[in-house]
Image (cartoon, rainbow, N blue to C red; front, side):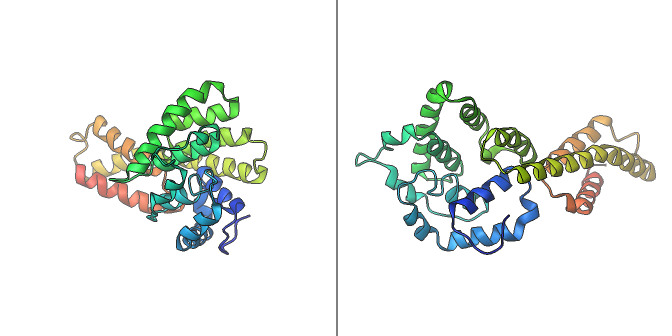
Length: 254
């Protein structure tokens, strides 16, 4: 499905994006890192090959994927989509997927990146106005993105939402979707077991230190909520590290 050999094809980039949004990227860490490192090293060359394809010039793919991975790439590549007056071209508005990609990419802006701030305003204004006129599938994508862009979405929550959207895509990869569902259900069962393990540990810990009465339920609950949020986007194979983190956190509080 995804090989470690660097591949600059749009199909491979799309596959990486889908795998990440389905929440199963931790199964393909080496392959994804190899591909993204290749893209980062050849970023300007690849963007030149993409020409004026708004959808591909790293908006949904190269730019956003690389910044997601922690690689800094220049946003100057988006200047090609501006007119001589310095505004984004009106012709972009009719390209809904391109506009959505630009919006998601612009959410990865850092300080003093004026062009991305302009891109956010430009895309939000037009996506909101066109949303009611779009098909059910595309409309759901736009509405969901405007409500909570990828950059602000928790991995597990985003994966669950994306699964329902991806399933409506007629070109979706059936094997990949089913794999993501199985993986999600497996992790969900694990998360359901963790509250009882946490409760048991808190009881044992406080009893052994004779501080049970001083440790209120509300304090326990606050720690658990914080721990739960963190766990929702930590790989399942790091369970021992999560347990260690929890124990250290409890010792700090009790």
